[in-house]
Image 1: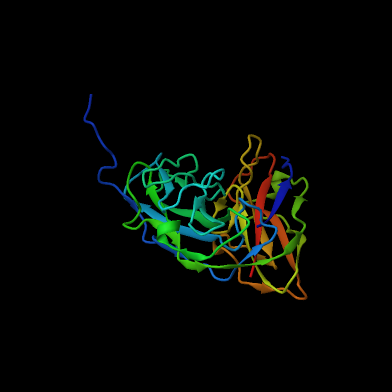
Image 2: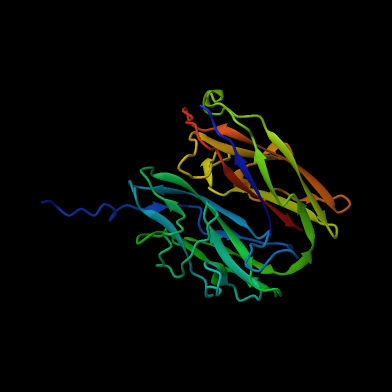
Length: 323
């Protein structure tokens, strides 16, 4: 898998009755089960064992509605397929197909660990509930390379399922799962990405420049170059290492540090289009003479009425997949 992480740095200037509250309350969604397909998966020869196989990621996003305030509870996911955890790979579970494991990542790109419907995966939560009775959930179902040689076979609910539930409480639906449903076979391709990582420095920006929600800095532009050893098409997607701060505008969170600025996030554009965080992979683009250049850019976006000074670093993951 090709990861390109962009680290952005700047300093902004400037005696009662026992009451069980959830006995008759519930949280639910109409968007589960979520069934994911895979077609014509190509594995880069540079993908290492233990890495996500680019092109296998499937965004599993859904809305949850609760009938009461469930503040303080945790939405978790547990692997409920037939396989066991792959030795040395926490949160990766055997699919029964040689060379392939399955995993689920939360919105901070942390792998969820725990098997069985009653597992405790609160260390890598899907969502921490607050006083809001409705909220959106963002996770990613992925395949992991577990051996140099890969086989082929069926992916289905019996070997790739993850179940969502409120920890120590109810599931979100009668079938509260996500899983792959596909016949898996692969081909291999060798591609390179330049640069593999990049530090984008936006300089010092006074806090007074941000005059209200929606204020942005200018785009800081750069190019991503892709070269392959054979004709292929590429797809790309973007993830923020810390998740989202504004889902409607696809604004990603800054790094969570003690001296971080507040009231800001980052947006990214590729091919002169601002990334829609929830779109997953963008449609395939054909290489020309086995090469492709993606123009990209990144900027700050004000998300609240007040901006407090501090460091404003962020990590963004651009994933390139091949077909």
